[in-house]
Length: 383
Length: 201
Image 1: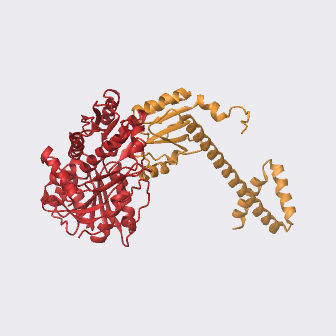
Image 2 (image 1 turned 180 degrees about the vertical axis):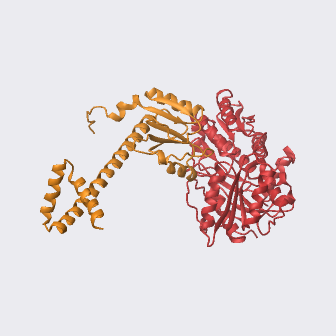
Image 3 (image 1 turned 90 degrees about the horizontal axis):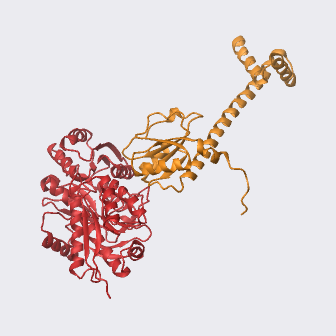
Protein backbone atom coordinates (compact mmCIF):
# COMPACT_ATOMS: atom_id res chain seq x y z
CA UNK A 1 0.00 0.00 0.00
CA UNK A 2 1.26 3.44 -0.88
CA UNK A 3 2.45 5.68 1.92
CA UNK A 4 0.24 8.77 2.20
CA UNK A 5 1.60 10.07 5.48
CA UNK A 6 2.64 13.72 5.38
CA UNK A 7 6.29 14.76 5.36
CA UNK A 8 7.19 17.30 8.00
CA UNK A 9 10.04 19.69 7.25
CA UNK A 10 11.57 22.33 9.54
CA UNK A 11 11.86 26.04 8.69
CA UNK A 12 14.20 28.35 10.60
CA UNK A 13 13.67 31.90 9.37
CA UNK A 14 13.41 34.94 11.64
CA UNK A 15 10.22 36.98 11.57
CA UNK A 16 11.60 39.34 14.19
CA UNK A 17 14.99 40.97 14.88
CA UNK A 18 17.73 42.57 12.80
CA UNK A 19 17.42 40.29 9.77
CA UNK A 20 13.65 39.73 9.82
CA UNK A 21 12.92 41.37 6.45
CA UNK A 22 15.23 39.22 4.36
CA UNK A 23 14.47 36.01 6.26
CA UNK A 24 10.73 36.63 6.03
CA UNK A 25 11.12 36.79 2.25
CA UNK A 26 13.09 33.52 2.37
CA UNK A 27 10.32 32.01 4.50
CA UNK A 28 7.71 33.06 1.93
CA UNK A 29 9.77 31.70 -0.96
CA UNK A 30 9.91 28.40 0.91
CA UNK A 31 6.16 28.39 1.55
CA UNK A 32 5.43 29.19 -2.11
CA UNK A 33 7.39 26.15 -3.26
CA UNK A 34 5.78 23.93 -0.62
CA UNK A 35 2.34 25.14 -1.79
CA UNK A 36 3.24 24.39 -5.39
CA UNK A 37 4.48 20.90 -4.57
CA UNK A 38 1.39 20.14 -2.50
CA UNK A 39 -0.97 21.58 -5.16
CA UNK A 40 0.61 19.23 -7.69
CA UNK A 41 -0.15 16.19 -5.55
CA UNK A 42 2.67 16.45 -3.02
CA UNK A 43 5.62 14.08 -3.16
CA UNK A 44 4.00 10.99 -4.67
CA UNK A 45 0.80 11.75 -2.83
CA UNK A 46 2.47 12.78 0.40
CA UNK A 47 1.82 16.31 1.61
CA UNK A 48 4.71 18.49 2.80
CA UNK A 49 3.88 20.12 6.14
CA UNK A 50 6.23 22.89 7.28
CA UNK A 51 6.98 23.43 10.95
CA UNK A 52 8.27 26.97 11.34
CA UNK A 53 9.96 28.52 14.35
CA UNK A 54 11.06 32.14 14.70
CA UNK A 55 14.68 32.27 15.94
CA UNK A 56 14.43 36.09 16.33
CA UNK A 57 17.76 36.72 14.52
CA UNK A 58 19.65 35.18 17.48
CA UNK A 59 22.29 32.47 16.76
CA UNK A 60 21.64 30.82 20.14
CA UNK A 61 17.97 30.38 19.29
CA UNK A 62 18.79 28.85 15.90
CA UNK A 63 20.71 26.15 17.72
CA UNK A 64 17.99 25.54 20.32
CA UNK A 65 15.21 25.48 17.73
CA UNK A 66 17.18 23.26 15.34
CA UNK A 67 17.55 20.79 18.20
CA UNK A 68 13.84 21.04 18.95
CA UNK A 69 13.02 20.32 15.28
CA UNK A 70 15.26 17.26 15.35
CA UNK A 71 14.46 15.82 18.77
CA UNK A 72 10.82 16.80 19.38
CA UNK A 73 9.40 17.22 15.89
CA UNK A 74 11.45 14.34 14.40
CA UNK A 75 12.40 16.48 11.40
CA UNK A 76 14.94 15.16 8.88
CA UNK A 77 15.23 18.21 6.64
CA UNK A 78 15.55 21.86 7.66
CA UNK A 79 15.38 24.92 5.41
CA UNK A 80 16.80 28.10 6.82
CA UNK A 81 19.45 30.59 7.98
CA UNK A 82 20.73 33.83 6.49
CA UNK A 83 23.76 34.95 8.50
CA UNK A 84 26.81 32.69 8.74
CA UNK A 85 26.72 32.87 12.53
CA UNK A 86 23.27 31.28 12.52
CA UNK A 87 24.33 28.56 10.05
CA UNK A 88 27.34 27.83 12.25
CA UNK A 89 24.99 27.53 15.23
CA UNK A 90 22.87 24.91 13.45
CA UNK A 91 25.76 22.82 12.07
CA UNK A 92 26.66 21.01 15.32
CA UNK A 93 23.04 19.85 15.65
CA UNK A 94 22.53 18.61 12.10
CA UNK A 95 25.94 16.94 12.00
CA UNK A 96 25.41 15.27 15.37
CA UNK A 97 21.98 13.86 14.40
CA UNK A 98 22.84 13.49 10.70
CA UNK A 99 20.09 15.74 9.36
CA UNK A 100 20.03 17.89 6.21
CA UNK A 101 20.06 21.70 6.03
CA UNK A 102 19.21 23.65 2.88
CA UNK A 103 20.93 27.06 3.15
CA UNK A 104 19.51 29.62 0.68
CA UNK A 105 21.95 32.49 1.20
CA UNK A 106 25.09 33.93 -0.33
CA UNK A 107 27.99 33.68 2.13
CA UNK A 108 31.79 33.95 2.35
CA UNK A 109 32.64 30.35 1.38
CA UNK A 110 35.23 28.03 2.97
CA UNK A 111 32.81 25.45 4.19
CA UNK A 112 31.42 22.21 2.85
CA UNK A 113 29.45 20.28 5.41
CA UNK A 114 28.22 16.88 4.24
CA UNK A 115 24.94 17.81 5.91
CA UNK A 116 24.30 21.04 4.00
CA UNK A 117 23.23 21.98 0.50
CA UNK A 118 24.22 25.60 -0.25
CA UNK A 119 21.98 27.32 -2.81
CA UNK A 120 23.17 30.92 -2.48
CA UNK A 121 26.19 32.43 -4.23
CA UNK A 122 29.80 31.73 -3.25
CA UNK A 123 32.21 34.68 -3.66
CA UNK A 124 33.33 33.50 -7.10
CA UNK A 125 29.70 33.84 -8.20
CA UNK A 126 29.14 37.45 -7.16
CA UNK A 127 32.17 39.32 -5.67
CA UNK A 128 34.40 38.93 -8.71
CA UNK A 129 31.72 39.99 -11.17
CA UNK A 130 30.81 43.00 -9.02
CA UNK A 131 34.47 44.09 -8.66
CA UNK A 132 34.97 43.71 -12.40
CA UNK A 133 31.93 45.84 -13.21
CA UNK A 134 32.56 48.53 -10.59
CA UNK A 135 36.23 49.06 -11.37
CA UNK A 136 35.55 49.13 -15.12
CA UNK A 137 32.55 51.48 -14.86
CA UNK A 138 33.29 53.82 -11.96
CA UNK A 139 36.96 53.65 -10.97
CA UNK A 140 39.41 51.77 -8.80
CA UNK A 141 39.30 53.57 -5.43
CA UNK A 142 36.95 51.81 -3.02
CA UNK A 143 35.58 52.62 0.45
CA UNK A 144 34.39 49.57 2.43
CA UNK A 145 31.47 49.73 4.88
CA UNK A 146 30.17 46.58 6.57
CA UNK A 147 28.27 45.04 9.45
CA UNK A 148 30.58 43.81 12.16
CA UNK A 149 30.76 40.06 11.55
CA UNK A 150 32.59 37.45 9.53
CA UNK A 151 30.84 37.74 6.16
CA UNK A 152 31.76 41.43 5.72
CA UNK A 153 35.39 40.86 6.86
CA UNK A 154 35.88 38.09 4.35
CA UNK A 155 33.98 39.83 1.53
CA UNK A 156 36.07 42.95 2.10
CA UNK A 157 39.28 40.92 1.97
CA UNK A 158 38.23 39.57 -1.43
CA UNK A 159 37.08 43.00 -2.72
CA UNK A 160 40.35 44.60 -1.60
CA UNK A 161 42.40 41.87 -3.32
CA UNK A 162 40.43 42.38 -6.52
CA UNK A 163 40.57 46.18 -6.54
CA UNK A 164 44.33 46.09 -5.95
CA UNK A 165 44.71 44.03 -9.14
CA UNK A 166 43.74 47.17 -11.10
CA UNK A 167 46.37 49.77 -11.92
CA UNK A 168 46.03 52.52 -9.31
CA UNK A 169 43.57 50.41 -7.28
CA UNK A 170 43.24 51.61 -3.71
CA UNK A 171 41.25 50.98 -0.54
CA UNK A 172 40.61 54.45 0.88
CA UNK A 173 38.59 53.43 3.94
CA UNK A 174 37.20 50.44 5.84
CA UNK A 175 34.56 50.84 8.56
CA UNK A 176 32.28 48.48 10.48
CA UNK A 177 28.97 49.10 12.24
CA UNK A 178 26.95 46.93 14.66
CA UNK A 179 24.28 44.63 13.19
CA UNK A 180 21.58 46.82 14.71
CA UNK A 181 23.17 50.06 13.45
CA UNK A 182 20.86 53.06 13.08
CA UNK A 183 21.02 56.22 10.97
CA UNK A 184 23.41 58.06 13.33
CA UNK A 185 25.99 55.23 13.18
CA UNK A 186 26.55 56.06 9.50
CA UNK A 187 26.83 59.84 9.80
CA UNK A 188 30.55 60.04 10.61
CA UNK A 189 31.28 57.32 8.04
CA UNK A 190 29.48 59.21 5.28
CA UNK A 191 31.33 62.38 6.30
CA UNK A 192 34.59 60.46 5.91
CA UNK A 193 33.41 59.15 2.52
CA UNK A 194 32.73 62.73 1.42
CA UNK A 195 36.22 63.63 2.52
CA UNK A 196 38.01 60.68 0.85
CA UNK A 197 35.96 60.80 -2.39
CA UNK A 198 36.23 57.12 -3.42
CA UNK A 199 35.08 56.02 -6.88
CA UNK A 200 32.57 53.68 -5.27
CA UNK A 201 31.50 52.34 -1.89
CA UNK A 202 31.31 48.59 -1.26
CA UNK A 203 28.64 47.86 1.35
CA UNK A 204 28.43 44.58 3.24
CA UNK A 205 25.92 46.03 5.67
CA UNK A 206 23.17 43.43 6.06
CA UNK A 207 19.65 43.30 7.41
CA UNK A 208 17.39 46.09 8.55
CA UNK A 209 20.21 48.62 9.05
CA UNK A 210 20.92 48.63 5.29
CA UNK A 211 18.31 51.32 4.72
CA UNK A 212 20.04 53.61 7.25
CA UNK A 213 23.30 53.56 5.26
CA UNK A 214 21.58 54.45 2.00
CA UNK A 215 19.45 57.09 3.73
CA UNK A 216 22.54 58.68 5.32
CA UNK A 217 24.18 58.66 1.89
CA UNK A 218 21.16 60.38 0.32
CA UNK A 219 20.92 62.91 3.16
CA UNK A 220 24.54 63.91 2.55
CA UNK A 221 23.65 64.74 -1.05
CA UNK A 222 26.06 62.25 -2.60
CA UNK A 223 25.42 61.18 -6.18
CA UNK A 224 25.04 57.46 -7.09
CA UNK A 225 25.84 58.27 -10.70
CA UNK A 226 29.44 59.12 -9.86
CA UNK A 227 29.97 57.30 -6.53
CA UNK A 228 27.43 54.48 -6.16
CA UNK A 229 27.18 51.99 -3.33
CA UNK A 230 27.91 48.47 -4.62
CA UNK A 231 26.52 45.54 -2.65
CA UNK A 232 25.83 41.82 -2.64
CA UNK A 233 23.14 42.06 0.02
CA UNK A 234 21.12 45.16 -0.89
CA UNK A 235 18.35 43.61 -2.96
CA UNK A 236 14.68 44.37 -3.73
CA UNK A 237 13.53 43.86 -0.13
CA UNK A 238 16.11 46.31 1.24
CA UNK A 239 15.36 48.82 -1.56
CA UNK A 240 11.68 48.70 -0.62
CA UNK A 241 12.60 49.43 3.01
CA UNK A 242 14.62 52.51 2.09
CA UNK A 243 12.33 53.67 -0.71
CA UNK A 244 12.93 53.46 -4.46
CA UNK A 245 14.10 57.10 -4.63
CA UNK A 246 16.83 56.49 -2.02
CA UNK A 247 18.02 53.26 -3.65
CA UNK A 248 17.99 54.40 -7.28
CA UNK A 249 21.37 54.38 -9.02
CA UNK A 250 23.11 51.99 -6.61
CA UNK A 251 24.54 48.71 -7.87
CA UNK A 252 24.08 45.11 -6.70
CA UNK A 253 25.25 41.68 -7.84
CA UNK A 254 23.08 38.60 -7.39
CA UNK A 255 22.06 35.49 -9.31
CA UNK A 256 18.45 36.64 -9.29
CA UNK A 257 16.57 39.88 -9.68
CA UNK A 258 12.78 40.20 -9.90
CA UNK A 259 13.26 41.97 -13.22
CA UNK A 260 14.51 38.86 -15.06
CA UNK A 261 12.19 38.92 -18.07
CA UNK A 262 11.73 35.21 -18.68
CA UNK A 263 8.36 33.42 -18.77
CA UNK A 264 9.62 31.09 -16.02
CA UNK A 265 10.33 33.98 -13.64
CA UNK A 266 7.13 35.85 -14.45
CA UNK A 267 5.16 32.68 -13.78
CA UNK A 268 6.69 32.30 -10.27
CA UNK A 269 6.19 35.96 -9.43
CA UNK A 270 2.57 35.77 -10.59
CA UNK A 271 1.99 32.61 -8.59
CA UNK A 272 3.53 34.17 -5.50
CA UNK A 273 1.39 37.29 -5.76
CA UNK A 274 -1.74 35.22 -6.28
CA UNK A 275 -1.11 33.07 -3.20
CA UNK A 276 0.53 35.50 -0.79
CA UNK A 277 -0.23 39.05 -2.03
CA UNK A 278 2.45 41.67 -2.45
CA UNK A 279 3.55 42.47 1.12
CA UNK A 280 6.70 40.37 0.88
CA UNK A 281 9.17 41.34 -1.83
CA UNK A 282 10.84 38.62 -3.90
CA UNK A 283 14.66 38.81 -4.10
CA UNK A 284 17.64 36.47 -4.52
CA UNK A 285 17.17 35.01 -1.02
CA UNK A 286 13.53 34.38 -1.77
CA UNK A 287 14.38 32.67 -5.07
CA UNK A 288 17.06 30.39 -3.59
CA UNK A 289 14.67 29.48 -0.77
CA UNK A 290 12.05 28.73 -3.43
CA UNK A 291 14.04 26.54 -5.79
CA UNK A 292 15.80 24.55 -3.07
CA UNK A 293 12.42 23.17 -1.90
CA UNK A 294 11.77 21.93 -5.44
CA UNK A 295 15.24 20.35 -5.56
CA UNK A 296 14.38 18.59 -2.31
CA UNK A 297 10.96 17.45 -3.55
CA UNK A 298 12.38 16.11 -6.81
CA UNK A 299 15.15 14.23 -4.97
CA UNK A 300 12.65 12.72 -2.55
CA UNK A 301 10.47 11.52 -5.39
CA UNK A 302 13.47 9.42 -6.40
CA UNK A 303 14.57 8.32 -2.93
CA UNK A 304 11.13 7.83 -1.37
CA UNK A 305 12.63 8.87 1.94
CA UNK A 306 13.63 12.16 3.53
CA UNK A 307 16.59 10.62 5.37
CA UNK A 308 19.80 12.39 4.38
CA UNK A 309 21.57 9.21 3.26
CA UNK A 310 18.74 8.43 0.84
CA UNK A 311 18.26 12.02 -0.35
CA UNK A 312 21.85 13.13 -0.89
CA UNK A 313 22.75 10.86 -3.82
CA UNK A 314 19.64 12.15 -5.61
CA UNK A 315 20.32 15.78 -4.74
CA UNK A 316 23.95 15.96 -5.80
CA UNK A 317 24.10 16.68 -9.51
CA UNK A 318 20.36 17.35 -9.70
CA UNK A 319 19.04 20.23 -11.78
CA UNK A 320 15.99 22.47 -11.69
CA UNK A 321 14.52 25.20 -13.89
CA UNK A 322 14.67 28.01 -11.35
CA UNK A 323 13.46 31.56 -12.01
CA UNK A 324 17.13 32.60 -12.56
CA UNK A 325 17.78 29.77 -15.05
CA UNK A 326 18.58 26.07 -14.87
CA UNK A 327 20.53 25.50 -11.65
CA UNK A 328 22.47 22.43 -10.63
CA UNK A 329 23.89 21.15 -7.33
CA UNK A 330 27.62 20.64 -7.84
CA UNK A 331 28.24 17.10 -6.55
CA UNK A 332 31.83 17.88 -5.56
CA UNK A 333 31.09 20.68 -3.10
CA UNK A 334 27.33 20.76 -2.35
CA UNK A 335 27.11 24.35 -3.62
CA UNK A 336 25.01 25.42 -6.62
CA UNK A 337 25.83 26.44 -10.20
CA UNK A 338 24.25 29.89 -10.55
CA UNK A 339 23.91 32.82 -12.98
CA UNK A 340 25.70 35.96 -11.71
CA UNK A 341 24.01 39.23 -12.69
CA UNK A 342 24.68 42.91 -12.08
CA UNK A 343 21.72 45.22 -11.55
CA UNK A 344 21.36 48.97 -11.05
CA UNK A 345 18.43 50.00 -8.87
CA UNK A 346 15.89 52.06 -10.79
CA UNK A 347 13.12 54.50 -9.92
CA UNK A 348 10.51 51.77 -9.49
CA UNK A 349 12.45 49.86 -6.81
CA UNK A 350 13.54 47.18 -9.28
CA UNK A 351 16.97 46.43 -10.68
CA UNK A 352 17.81 47.13 -14.31
CA UNK A 353 20.04 44.20 -15.28
CA UNK A 354 23.17 45.51 -16.99
CA UNK A 355 25.29 42.34 -17.05
CA UNK A 356 24.39 38.67 -16.90
CA UNK A 357 25.96 35.26 -17.31
CA UNK A 358 24.76 33.19 -20.25
CA UNK A 359 26.08 29.98 -18.74
CA UNK A 360 25.86 28.95 -15.08
CA UNK A 361 29.03 29.65 -13.10
CA UNK A 362 30.35 26.72 -11.07
CA UNK A 363 30.72 27.35 -7.34
CA UNK A 364 34.28 27.39 -6.00
CA UNK A 365 33.87 27.90 -2.23
CA UNK A 366 37.56 27.31 -1.42
CA UNK A 367 38.99 29.85 -3.85
CA UNK A 368 41.42 32.12 -1.95
CA UNK A 369 42.79 34.38 -4.68
CA UNK A 370 40.16 35.59 -7.11
CA UNK A 371 41.20 37.12 -10.43
CA UNK A 372 39.66 39.83 -12.54
CA UNK A 373 39.41 39.07 -16.23
CA UNK A 374 38.77 35.33 -15.81
CA UNK A 375 36.87 34.36 -18.99
CA UNK A 376 34.90 31.64 -17.18
CA UNK A 377 33.17 34.27 -15.10
CA UNK A 378 32.86 37.14 -17.56
CA UNK A 379 29.33 38.41 -18.07
CA UNK A 380 27.35 39.53 -21.10
CA UNK A 381 25.50 42.78 -21.63
CA UNK A 382 21.81 41.95 -22.16
CA UNK A 383 20.38 43.13 -25.48
CA UNK B 1 54.40 -3.16 10.39
CA UNK B 2 55.85 -4.22 13.69
CA UNK B 3 54.93 -2.02 16.60
CA UNK B 4 58.02 -1.26 18.63
CA UNK B 5 57.59 -2.18 22.28
CA UNK B 6 58.95 1.01 23.76
CA UNK B 7 58.16 2.47 27.13
CA UNK B 8 55.37 5.04 27.16
CA UNK B 9 56.73 8.39 26.08
CA UNK B 10 57.05 11.28 28.49
CA UNK B 11 54.62 13.32 26.35
CA UNK B 12 51.88 10.80 27.10
CA UNK B 13 52.81 10.07 30.71
CA UNK B 14 52.79 13.77 31.56
CA UNK B 15 49.20 14.29 30.35
CA UNK B 16 47.80 13.76 33.86
CA UNK B 17 49.99 16.49 35.34
CA UNK B 18 49.17 19.14 32.76
CA UNK B 19 47.62 22.39 33.81
CA UNK B 20 45.38 23.64 31.00
CA UNK B 21 43.84 27.09 30.56
CA UNK B 22 41.01 27.02 28.03
CA UNK B 23 39.85 30.35 26.64
CA UNK B 24 36.45 29.41 25.29
CA UNK B 25 32.93 30.86 25.55
CA UNK B 26 30.70 29.10 28.08
CA UNK B 27 28.67 27.07 25.59
CA UNK B 28 28.15 23.41 24.74
CA UNK B 29 31.42 23.29 22.82
CA UNK B 30 33.30 24.75 25.78
CA UNK B 31 31.72 22.18 28.08
CA UNK B 32 32.62 19.35 25.73
CA UNK B 33 36.23 20.61 25.63
CA UNK B 34 36.49 20.73 29.43
CA UNK B 35 34.84 17.33 29.86
CA UNK B 36 37.27 15.68 27.45
CA UNK B 37 40.32 17.43 28.93
CA UNK B 38 39.27 16.22 32.38
CA UNK B 39 38.63 12.71 31.07
CA UNK B 40 42.17 12.73 29.74
CA UNK B 41 43.21 13.78 33.24
CA UNK B 42 44.41 17.34 32.74
CA UNK B 43 43.74 20.04 35.31
CA UNK B 44 41.58 22.25 33.13
CA UNK B 45 39.98 25.61 33.79
CA UNK B 46 37.93 27.67 31.32
CA UNK B 47 37.90 31.44 30.85
CA UNK B 48 36.33 33.90 28.43
CA UNK B 49 37.27 36.30 26.90
CA UNK B 50 40.99 35.59 26.35
CA UNK B 51 43.36 37.21 28.89
CA UNK B 52 45.60 39.98 27.51
CA UNK B 53 48.68 38.17 28.95
CA UNK B 54 49.55 34.48 28.67
CA UNK B 55 48.48 32.83 31.94
CA UNK B 56 51.41 31.95 34.19
CA UNK B 57 51.76 28.36 35.31
CA UNK B 58 49.72 26.90 32.46
CA UNK B 59 51.35 24.10 30.46
CA UNK B 60 48.78 24.30 27.69
CA UNK B 61 46.51 27.10 26.53
CA UNK B 62 43.49 26.51 24.30
CA UNK B 63 42.09 29.60 22.63
CA UNK B 64 38.89 29.83 20.61
CA UNK B 65 39.51 32.14 17.64
CA UNK B 66 36.22 33.88 16.96
CA UNK B 67 35.47 36.50 14.31
CA UNK B 68 33.81 38.76 16.89
CA UNK B 69 36.58 38.63 19.52
CA UNK B 70 40.00 40.24 19.09
CA UNK B 71 42.95 37.83 19.31
CA UNK B 72 45.28 38.82 22.19
CA UNK B 73 48.89 39.70 21.40
CA UNK B 74 50.91 37.30 23.51
CA UNK B 75 54.18 37.64 21.56
CA UNK B 76 56.00 39.38 24.45
CA UNK B 77 55.16 36.55 26.85
CA UNK B 78 56.46 33.84 24.51
CA UNK B 79 59.73 32.94 26.29
CA UNK B 80 61.34 29.51 26.63
CA UNK B 81 58.91 28.48 29.37
CA UNK B 82 55.78 29.66 27.51
CA UNK B 83 52.98 27.11 27.26
CA UNK B 84 51.78 25.07 24.30
CA UNK B 85 49.08 27.02 22.45
CA UNK B 86 46.26 25.35 20.54
CA UNK B 87 43.65 27.29 18.55
CA UNK B 88 40.02 26.23 18.26
CA UNK B 89 38.33 27.42 15.07
CA UNK B 90 34.75 27.32 13.82
CA UNK B 91 35.42 29.12 10.52
CA UNK B 92 38.05 28.18 7.97
CA UNK B 93 38.10 31.24 5.72
CA UNK B 94 41.32 33.22 5.09
CA UNK B 95 40.33 35.98 7.54
CA UNK B 96 40.21 33.50 10.43
CA UNK B 97 43.16 31.40 9.29
CA UNK B 98 45.21 34.61 9.18
CA UNK B 99 44.25 35.32 12.80
CA UNK B 100 45.46 31.82 13.74
CA UNK B 101 48.70 32.29 11.82
CA UNK B 102 49.38 35.53 13.72
CA UNK B 103 48.90 33.67 17.01
CA UNK B 104 51.73 31.25 16.07
CA UNK B 105 49.99 28.25 17.61
CA UNK B 106 51.37 24.73 17.94
CA UNK B 107 48.17 22.99 16.97
CA UNK B 108 44.59 23.44 15.88
CA UNK B 109 41.29 21.84 16.81
CA UNK B 110 38.07 22.20 14.83
CA UNK B 111 34.79 23.24 16.34
CA UNK B 112 32.29 21.65 17.01
CA UNK B 113 34.60 19.86 19.45
CA UNK B 114 34.54 16.09 19.30
CA UNK B 115 36.11 14.11 22.13
CA UNK B 116 37.91 11.93 19.60
CA UNK B 117 41.10 13.53 18.31
CA UNK B 118 41.66 15.95 21.17
CA UNK B 119 44.26 13.78 22.91
CA UNK B 120 46.30 13.31 19.73
CA UNK B 121 46.11 17.03 18.96
CA UNK B 122 47.24 17.83 22.49
CA UNK B 123 50.19 15.45 22.44
CA UNK B 124 51.40 16.45 18.97
CA UNK B 125 51.10 20.15 19.81
CA UNK B 126 53.16 19.60 22.97
CA UNK B 127 55.76 17.73 20.95
CA UNK B 128 55.96 20.59 18.44
CA UNK B 129 56.23 23.14 21.24
CA UNK B 130 58.95 21.12 23.01
CA UNK B 131 61.00 20.54 19.91
CA UNK B 132 60.65 24.21 18.96
CA UNK B 133 61.85 25.19 22.45
CA UNK B 134 64.74 22.70 22.24
CA UNK B 135 65.71 24.07 18.87
CA UNK B 136 65.62 27.63 20.18
CA UNK B 137 67.90 26.60 23.06
CA UNK B 138 70.26 24.87 20.66
CA UNK B 139 70.37 27.89 18.37
CA UNK B 140 71.22 30.07 21.36
CA UNK B 141 74.01 27.64 22.39
CA UNK B 142 75.42 27.56 18.88
CA UNK B 143 75.28 31.34 18.60
CA UNK B 144 77.30 31.77 21.80
CA UNK B 145 79.68 29.01 20.70
CA UNK B 146 80.17 30.81 17.42
CA UNK B 147 80.80 34.09 19.21
CA UNK B 148 83.41 32.27 21.37
CA UNK B 149 85.20 30.90 18.32
CA UNK B 150 85.28 34.40 16.85
CA UNK B 151 86.74 35.80 20.08
CA UNK B 152 89.45 33.14 20.22
CA UNK B 153 90.47 33.89 16.64
CA UNK B 154 90.58 37.59 17.37
CA UNK B 155 92.53 37.11 20.65
CA UNK B 156 95.06 34.92 18.85
CA UNK B 157 95.58 37.62 16.21
CA UNK B 158 96.10 40.24 18.93
CA UNK B 159 98.69 38.09 20.72
CA UNK B 160 100.47 37.18 17.49
CA UNK B 161 100.86 40.88 16.74
CA UNK B 162 101.71 42.05 20.29
CA UNK B 163 104.09 39.26 21.27
CA UNK B 164 105.27 38.25 17.83
CA UNK B 165 104.41 34.55 18.29
CA UNK B 166 103.00 31.84 16.02
CA UNK B 167 99.33 30.91 16.01
CA UNK B 168 99.77 27.64 18.02
CA UNK B 169 101.83 29.58 20.58
CA UNK B 170 99.20 32.30 20.82
CA UNK B 171 96.55 29.66 21.48
CA UNK B 172 98.81 28.02 24.09
CA UNK B 173 99.15 31.35 25.92
CA UNK B 174 95.36 31.84 26.03
CA UNK B 175 94.86 28.25 27.20
CA UNK B 176 97.48 28.53 29.96
CA UNK B 177 95.95 31.79 31.20
CA UNK B 178 92.48 30.22 31.18
CA UNK B 179 93.84 27.26 33.24
CA UNK B 180 95.52 29.58 35.70
CA UNK B 181 92.41 31.73 36.10
CA UNK B 182 90.14 28.65 36.14
CA UNK B 183 87.97 29.87 33.30
CA UNK B 184 87.24 28.83 29.72
CA UNK B 185 89.38 29.57 26.68
CA UNK B 186 86.42 31.49 25.17
CA UNK B 187 86.08 33.62 28.27
CA UNK B 188 89.82 34.36 28.40
CA UNK B 189 89.77 35.26 24.71
CA UNK B 190 86.87 37.63 25.30
CA UNK B 191 88.86 39.33 28.13
CA UNK B 192 91.86 39.83 25.80
CA UNK B 193 89.69 41.27 23.02
CA UNK B 194 87.97 43.64 25.47
CA UNK B 195 91.24 44.74 27.06
CA UNK B 196 92.74 45.32 23.64
CA UNK B 197 89.76 47.54 22.73
CA UNK B 198 90.35 49.64 25.85
CA UNK B 199 94.16 49.82 25.73
CA UNK B 200 94.93 50.25 22.08
CA UNK B 201 91.99 51.94 20.31
